[in-house]
Amino acid sequence: MKTNKRASWRAWLGLVTALLGLLGLTLAQRAAAQQTLVVAAYPAVDEIVRAALPAWQQRHPHVEVKVVSRQFADHHTAMTTALSTAVYLPDVMALEVGYLGRFSPGYGLEDLALPPYEITRFKSRFVPYAYQQAHNRRGEVVAVPTDIGPGTLLYRRDVLAKAGVSEADLTRSWDSYVAAGIKIKASSGAFLLAHARDIKNILIRTGIQPGEGLYFDSQSRVLVASKRFVRAFELARAVRQHQLDARVLAWSADWTEGFKRGSIATQLSGAWLAGHLNSWLAPDTAGLWRAAQLPEGAFAAYGGTFFAIPRKADPAHKALAWDLIQFLTLNREMQLRAFKAQDAFPALLDAHDDPFFEQPIAFLGGQTARLGWRDAARRIQAVDVHKQDAFAEEVIDTELDKVLERGKDIRTALADAERLLTRRATR
Image 1 (cartoon, rainbow, N blue to C red):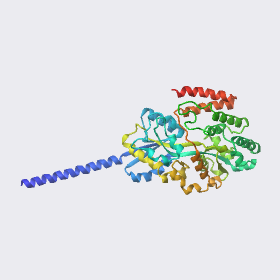
Image 2 (tube, rainbow, N blue to C red; image 1 turned 90 degrees about the vertical axis):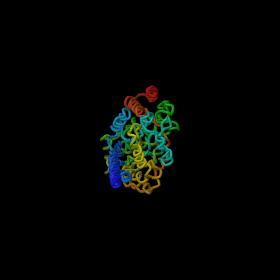
Image 3 (cartoon, rainbow, N blue to C red; image 1 turned 45 degrees about the horizontal axis):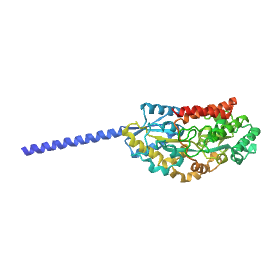
Image 4 (cartoon, helix red, strand yellow; image 1 turned 180 degrees about the horizontal axis):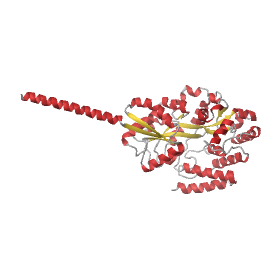
């Protein structure tokens, strides 16, 4: 009888243990199913992430990913607030290179060079200048490049033909570029470019020496009185004096209309602009545009996107966040998918040998322009980022406007900018 009772007791314990084990497994599965990863992004990076999620979630079927999308400026404002307050922090945040310098000097982002990330293992797989831009002065790597913007000159072939101007006239030198604009304006009435700022924006990105950024060097010394800024201002002034710019700013309605009507003959920008013109800015102008390298053999970066992990984000999600970032940036198929769908030029060198680069681009009259952009990407020198880059851009644009609109002396304008930025950089 005792034996039967003991056996019954053991059977009952076994059943309870099994039930508890099953309950524990169910709770664990529910916990996994309830995991939600938050990614903060802006157009069209949000679409790139969403398109990659079905493939990534095959590896993580119990993880939900919520993509929080805001317009470009609103996104970066929200990320600034989130990092400073540690409230509503996403697990992964997209950052444009122009804002990366604002965040990298602080301690708000994970150092991806440290374990368990150890991004240095993958350094050789990225376009060198893009990888370097993610460094701060402490030697930390605070973000992973996902796309880049090799600079290019886009021009309207039909407008140039009417003026008797060749591509070589545009690209031989910056002076010949301006001279070609004078001929274009005289023959067709079209403006050479949208705004005189555009030529300044490219020129200050050329001739940068190692250890220098756009506006500051590695010791926070201000560089805006240097020769490249003087020349950039001089050429911008020449453009305005000859009335060669339409005086419209990027992304405005007048800017878009200028492309549609052919009243803007060229645009200096990142290679991504060709895709925007084709998909939504001026699709009816297909076949009329061509792409060339920048004048005077210049190579410059214009834009680029990075992914980062906030240091104070939920620790339980960081392994998943890093896995998703690797999937988006180190997966050749994902990089090419983003390039083909959104014209996000790959930061991953593994993707640069794909036959897609050799395909003619119908919008550009059958040009194989991606080969030229790939060559440019490999020639661009690394540019250090600085926490005051965004503010410095505002200061320089304000001083340039004073030169263009009020006739302010260029060296005086740059000296004034230098004084203001020197005070700001030492804070």
